[in-house]
Length: 536
Image (cartoon, rainbow, N blue to C red; front, side, top):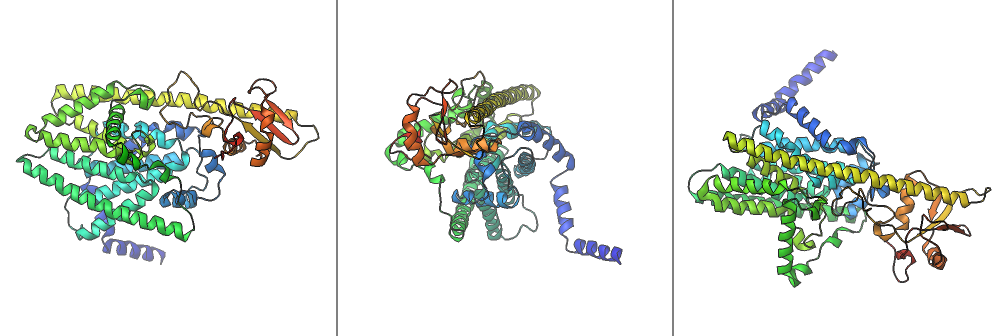
């Protein structure tokens, strides 16, 4: 009976055609387990540091102790809320979040390749690491709580792009219904990370460019294609943004969560007051990003200049009578990841909000090796390899500086804890109230480079110019649970006690006043010890 039931279910599954259609899709798109396994191995290699090391960076300490994921709803990231609430209730960890990211990157990449009308080949394999290791992914990986939700958001973007740009096949369904589905998927992606809407815009522009490079005939055909793609993508993004705002507002009202955080990045007055300065500085920042400037990455990548220059040369010479249109669209692709800078400021957005840059450099790599002449392929692969090597060298420096900085912070926390406990009477038991005065430098001046606005190699004793709640939480995550931060009024009353104390690690930098342990880690007062300033 059991065998008959199983057979009936299998037959029923075949009757509805869903399995057959999926199998046909796999065959049509040349999807194979070998491709996935190879790309997944490369993705794991790209994230091997975070997979194999527990890297506790700024904000991870808060994520490690919270029991309510509604902080994501306050930031307008309802998809991230669902991921943390139901899949990763302890988000500040290593290994599993980054494996999820690796899987999502691979699946998204496979869809991106096919959305461009490409089939998997040595070119798609050779350029994958450009996509997976670009420093924007390091910036997002610094915050473990961000990782699985952002990976899912990336996959949702790839699904939306594929549904929007898939080739004409039977069963695609009415246009309005398909566009509605694409917009809904994008709204969910925005719920993971709002800037992923710009990722979709960048990829759509890139697909238009890539397809136009293979077009022949009159330039009017290219113009019509560009205009059609712009209208199509613009309509999808408007509907997606409307869905996102409706879902986000509805959930915030339903769960009584006020909005926070995101609005602090938006400064529309810049556009009104200093538009020429704003756009000029955005252009300069874009140039720094695409040419591998040390002001952005911490260390220069000279191969980036040659990489981008040769990409421009290919675009300008493929279909020369269409070259102006191609170059104009390429400029749109380059500029799309920076659209938020128009409202936030020239370089105000952290690189983690510009994940679309990973797609841009991948597209440049694909274009670079698209020409088939043997001498050009040798030269192009050499330049691509040099650029990839410099990215890997850059990530290696980030790993070195992160390892040193986080080890230094742990040593400081442990040494301070030992000194405080040594000052306690032998009969004392229970928790100790602590107060830290001042702050240490955010980044140590070491020999290894750090990315601009990086958090993995920042000190918990320096972030926010000295934040007692953050420091106390960090120490508790490390296992030092005997200490509780002193209340605000107590800190204000004890401020004069720090006047004659030296700065840690000098003797006398830690002392007991009643039942409060005082630690002076910086010469200048932090917000908690400054009148008329509320500590964050």
